[in-house]
Image (cartoon, rainbow, N blue to C red; front, side, top):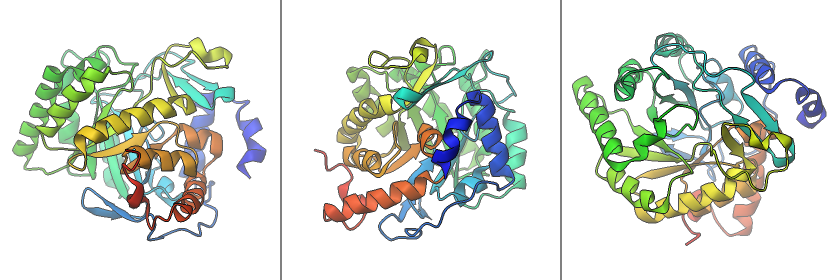
Length: 348
């Protein structure tokens, strides 16, 4: 059904189309086609000690203001991450700021953490109890004088109303944000978060979302920092501001973060490098180019315990989780695997 409407949807400005998608989900206009693999033991797992129906999550960026997370659970997502949320409301960068690269099955965005602010979004979550496992992705305001403190402000706002909090240090659209990949700055940031958790008497799981554009030597440094702290998972990865050489679409030179299929191989390689260092001590959530059973299979094979997507749904439609599970099930059966967990990290 989606394939019949996609050409019409793609004639609309990408940000306008996104807003229409949010409204459609709000009013339950988007339905999930019958999922024959719902509650299948092949996909059931636990995340941060809680059972979830499958390891396929919606990445941050789609539901920035926590408006439709329950509708996304209704579409079959095993977990949903909202945000990125900043302490104060901000408009983000000027429009246009999202570009479809249809030939490349990709997006470029330079949104700049546009959101309604932590107070508004916190109230919305409290008013609409999540029907599944919900994460909140947090980051600093663009004009803040203290980025580190902005993370602490949002931690205090969300620690008791969601299932995990993601520390976003990797958007290419916020000035100086990626400097937190420096091991000393990352150590200071996570140490401050852990101190605040103790004050709050909170055990909220902390996840760190990293950039795909880091150097190999940074992988070892980041891994050491994460292992020295109580970080529960790492998201690999955010969008890239490189990797444009093989793109076809005329928008390939637009400034911003590239997501979708062109990120897939780069993401998988980075997942595998981190997996070899972290093993099972810190779980990996794999992101980048997930749009099929095969792309999901390759993420698990590289070492991801969970996956997230966003751009894949733009191109494949709202029933993408059903599609992925159906295709992944066939691949797992053909490989003699009983569950997706049997193949995690087996690339090595």
